[in-house]
Amino acid sequence: MIIAAFFFRQEIVQNAFFSDFVMYLYFICLLILFAFGAHGFVMVFHYLKQRHIEEVVPPFTVEPVVTVQLPVFNELYVVDRLIDSVCALDYPKEKLEIQVLDDSTDETYQVVEKAVKHYCELGYDVKHIHRIDRTGYKAGALKNGLATARGEFIAIFDADFVPRQEFLQKTIPYFYTNPNVGLVQTRWEHLNSEYSLLTRTQAFALDGHFVIEQDVRNKAGFFINFNGTGGIWRKAAILDAGNWHSDTLTEDLDLSYRAQLKGWKFKYLNDVTSPAELPAEVNALKSQQFRWTKGAIETARKILPEVWKSNIPLRVKIHSTFHLTNNIVFPFILLAGILNVPLMFIKQQGGHDLYFAMMSVFVLAFVGSFLFYLYSQKAVYTDWRRRILLFPLFMAGSMGFAVNNSRAVFEGLFKRKSEFIRTPKYAINTKKDSWAGKKYVGLKIGWVSIVEMVLAVYCFFGVISSLYYMQFAAVPFQLLYFLGFFFVSLLSIKNALDARKLRQL
Image (cartoon, rainbow, N blue to C red):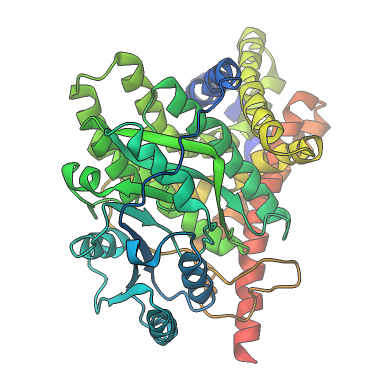
């Protein structure tokens, strides 16, 4: 009612300064969103151009010494599964070293110790490297383990992964096709994508990145990034690039760019997959998205000056800029959602027909995004027609996460340091499994969830007002914003309250 009273006041919506300010600001928002959204057309163009190129798979003929690093921190529910799967790799025991880089402060330490003892008795070279403090977080643990690693190549798996037995056989040969290959990255596969709508939507979003973005960038000669796990490095490339740094939350993205600027080549394997568990609880997903978003902005601030000072081709510099800064869209997604409501009242007053006709051009950005995700589903799944129906839910989710991720963007831009908060995993594989009542589940209802609910009410008012004034073209976007904010907030609050109840039992 307060919002309605404000915008129904004629002197507000008819004020020239107010209406011009809103329209100019909205135009800037859409222009930036269009630039990044239209980038989907570029990705689809390269994908269609290159998708018929057959990959020549080199034979597996050499068995070098490999170190597999497993960085873990309080992973009680999945660390056994991880160690079991790595020890099951199809590779000679004498050529395989496994480092469990354990920063745990709970009973995970005892679980790891028991598992390591078991496999050592079976003849495996498994080392339990436990740090008392988390200096440098994951980057610090990896760097610490690298100092004593005996492998020529370094494979890395996070705690939520279950590597396939043939992983080393299918990745190592690529290092011998070109001595400048510094990294081989595999595509993430999803262990629990069918667990819920939340995990299905996550899988949908990640498939866009792995099936299209990574593959296209690699084949087109652009820079790609190590995804932090599910890949294998040449040890010499890590050291030549300056080793792991802990000054950003995305140490993987940072090292990737430093290595490629040094001249190392990366190889992405779209047909070789590494299965992993998706966050099954929305607050865990929020913490993951916050870390990825903030870390990418931190890395952009650090690396972009080096990119533009380097002698790499201009097209690679431009693409790298889009790659490193794409998370900057979240504050503009948020701002566009807020401006939609006053803009609807300004349109109702009339006199700006040319402006609103021009704004319709920006819808093309959504077409680019739709095609991008359409082809990512068609490339992998036979039931892609069913899966592409998740696109509206994905768009609503992107809007619903705008508050959480905008906060991450601003913290990254203004150099606000924060702790590396890992994403908790609960060994969720089937619909019968449950995360509720387990350790690591967040119990706190943060201010972000409250702001999201307020924005949901605000956007719902926009939906009702658009229907009232018969501005039906505005309804789909207002509705997506409302649904996004509402369900992200509702799930965040509900999951925290459910966890509190179960913890008290």
